[in-house]
Amino acid sequence: MNRAWWWGLAGTVGFSLTLPATQIGDPFLGPDVMGMGRAAVAAIGAAAWLWLGRRPFPRRHALALMVVGLGVVIGFPWLSAAALTRLPAANGAVVVAILPLATAWVGARRAREVMPARFWAAAAAASAVVLGYALETGGRAAWPDLALVGAVMAAAVGYAEGGRLARQMPAADVICWALVLVSPATVWVAATHLPHPWSLVPARAWVALTYVALVSQLLAFFAWYRGLALGGVARISQVQYLQLFCTLGWASWLLGEPLTWQDAVAAVLVVGSVAIGQRTNLSGRIGGTGAGAIRERPPET
Image (tube, rainbow, N blue to C red):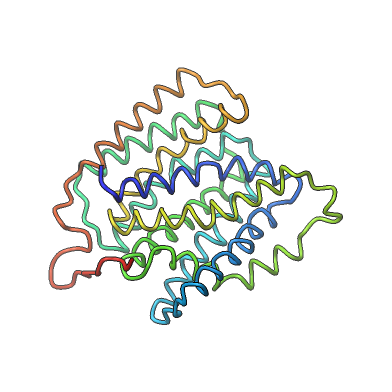
């Protein structure tokens, strides 16, 4: 397995505690703080990273960075946090079921990645297994599910655009500049929705907010965008099918929730589908072919 796969897996593991942490904090801090407050806190770390590294603002990528910010800094966190105040945990698994395939589809078009039929067959198989698993273990259709669908599409666009940008600039800078660009909105929303008095908020809610801010919204993206840049958006996005099962592992270890034989069977099927997709020979076609193809240079280090 190559470096791109490992970077993608590191990002996936970082993301895997996002939904549980959001559900822990939501009842006490609310979706506005859990969704936008995480971005506001992460923006402080992002600004420090850019300042210490003396990173100049990439003006020619300003619009693309704003798209990333609207997708993965505002769209996905806010919509998913709002949905999870009204839905059981199993419905959040639907996000995981759809997101990798949506990211691959957007990435294949936005980054001009030409993928063979075997790749799409493996991606569809993994989606079917995870979606079926999510519904079988308690998911149900509900109106707030529309918010989850919106969250999925926002994340897919943000992932694809960020992965494309990470081929032209340092991967960490992509999420950092995106956080900084949209920080006026995220800071304002978070500041105007903070609960009062703060003393009534339990420590576990603050810990949950800290995790989603520093890991889910910042550090995990360092690894995730690096993986997408090295291995291609469509291909590496498939690693995220493993996120649901990472989440189950965390829940079993930290919360004592039992694992079932359905968990094991679904995990084996998904891992097999992902393995097939990862072994797909891209034949150097990332970036497209022909006179109109975009040949982007490798990311800076």
